[in-house]
Length: 188
Image (cartoon, rainbow, N blue to C red; front, side, top):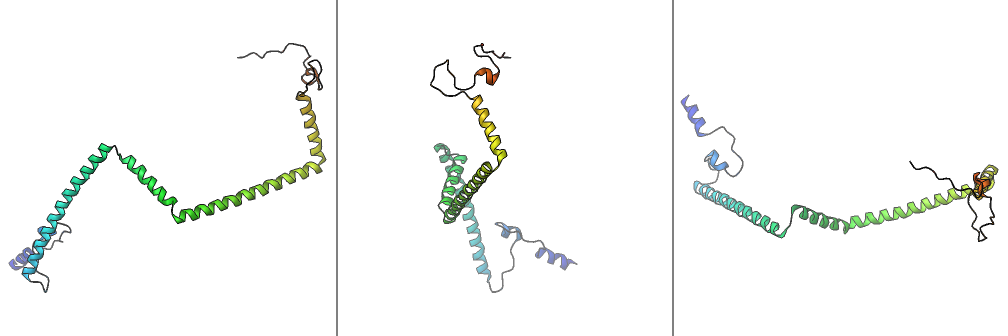
């Protein structure tokens, strides 16, 4: 039983961590086949060196990002301004792209064709209405009545003197005798 416990202590059953500190948490492992202990030691030293460089670079990057934020704040550049600039640049890139130009041309041609179709349809409807107007006696009769009413209601534009009127008088159209004072409508 002691051998089983000793064996489990030498070779842990836990899964090794993935990341920077995987080497320190798992402990030394047997060298891969074909690698000497000396080569493994060199790789371990190089690993530690690279990890230290990464940590140093992360610190330098954080300091540079802070410096960048300070400079932008001093210049008055806000995240909203940056977003606007990025959007403007992106929109400019889109509008100068070949795909956008082709799509724009296609839509323009489609708009011209649609305009021509609506114009033709409008002309056809106008012709049909004129045909109905000229052919249907009911429409002619209605049109004559509207014209008569229009003539009676609208005062004629004449250059004659005030006493002379060419159209119907106020009395005949509105039922108000001429010369009577106009009645005011009470305002509430």
